[in-house]
Image (tube, rainbow over all chains, first blue to last red; front, side, top):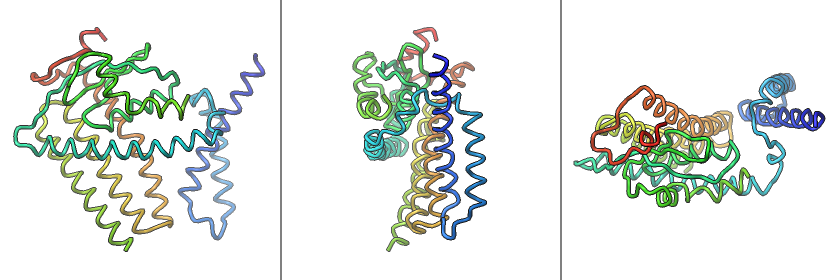
Length: 175
Length: 108
C-alpha cells in the first residue's frame, strides 16, 4: 500500500513536470539555435514544481498518457469553440436589444462526472456557453447554475439542456 | 493574406469586447453582468490573441499568444465562478425579475 502510494506520488510529480516543461518550451520558442542553459533552467524549475505541487494535482496522472483522450480533447476544443461563439452572439443579442430580454434565475443541475478535473472542466464549459454560469458545486454532484433565460426549473430538464452538451465528451477525456 | 485575416479577427475580437462592456452597463444585477462580461470578454480577448497568432505565424510572438489564449480560457471562467459565489455568500441579492433561486431554497 505504502509503495503504491509513493509510486503514485512520483507519477503525479512527473505529470506536473511534463506540463510545466511544455509551457516553458512554448514560451522560449524557437529552439534554433538550441540554448541549453535556458532549457536546463526550465527543467530545474519544472522538477521543483513537480516536487512541491505534485500533491495538489490530478489523482490519475496515468490518464495523461492515453492518446485517445487527446483525440477527444481536440474534438472538445471544436465543440467548445462552437458553443462559445453561440454564447457570444446570444449575449450580444440580449444587450443590444432595446428591451434587454432576460429571464434570469439560479437552477440546480445534476452531473454524473466523478473526477475533480472533469467537474472543473464542466463548470468552466458551462460558464462559457449560452446564458449559463456556474455559481457553486455541491459534494453530491449537483451544480448551481445562474441561467440568463430560464426555460425550465425542473432538475432533469435543466440538466438535459445545460449539462447534456458536454458531459459525454468530458467523460471520454477525463474518466 | 494571413496579415489581413489576422487583422479581421482582431477587429471582430474588439467588437465582442465592446458588446461585453455594453452588457456590463445594461444588464441589471451582478450575476447577469458577470455573464456578459465573462463570455464576451473571453472570446474578444482570445480573438485578438488569435489574430496576433495568425498574422505572426509560428514565431516567438505567436507562441506566446497561443499560451495566453490557453491561460485566459482556463482562468476567466474560474474567476467568474469565484466572483459569483463570493457575491452570493456576501448577500448580494438577485435582480427582482429573477424567476427562480434554487440556491437559496436548498439552504446552501
